Length: 209
Image (tube, rainbow, N blue to C red; front, side):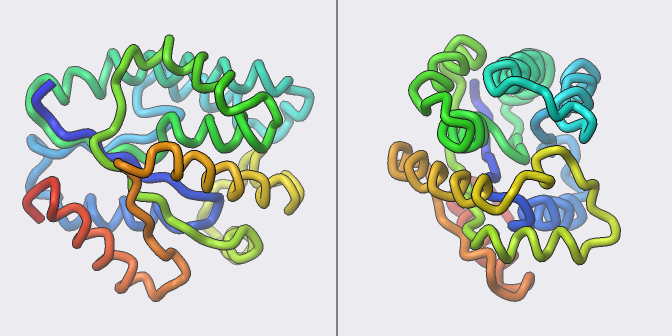
């Protein structure tokens, strides 16, 4: 694969999706070179799985079922969209990837980071990001942002109690340490202009901005 795989990670309400939207606007003239996508989703089958996972009515979903569904969506997304783009030498910027599963299902759900990583090793078959931008924000502030937003979709994970989101943050810290060679930390509790500049400063190492 000749392209560059960049992933964005962070807790709920950290603002990474907003930054990705700003990047899409900035790079609007470079659609043939840069692919923006998301997980779970990005292609038809994975978007259908997303609907199942994040549906607010599916409160009975088992944690391992959740982890397996994320891995299934990830696999299809990879082979149908991400890997072909990377093979063509494109830059792929993805909103969430395997680190989310490790933090959310592996740590916060209590399945175990190593167990969830094993599931995902089968799904991703060695494909990992060149760099991951982690948007660091206290869970309380993230949930407050979500409650104030009038346009953001509220999904099943948003409805979890604060303690769950605190575990997610702790899980991310473990994951970031494990993969510190590729993880760059963004302080998300800053004015959006400063966050955007911090992101661009990191991206300059991997692409022309």
